[in-house]
Length: 113
View 1 (cartoon, one colour):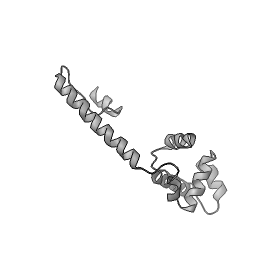
View 2: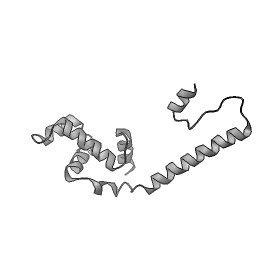
View 3: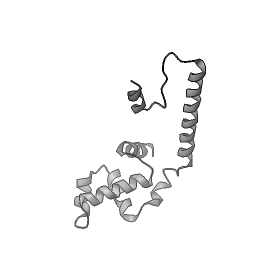
């Protein structure tokens, strides 16, 4: 059960019964970790500043992603100079440069703009 809780995002686990002090210590540690994550997010450039980090080709791929196109469609539009692997590579670099972990975060960024 504790392993599943950690996989689901728990900071730590406690064995029952536990003392009030042990619970407070775990909560304090979780708050410290969360505060560090918030501070790190604030130090990242804003969504408007992030695209300045992209190369022209990465911007082109990003624009096509914003248009809702998938890798195969982008590849067809950029041929003969691109393969699906190259497009995926550009997509990964776009996500890394604008500090996104996955397509869901990309969609959330697009929808918040």
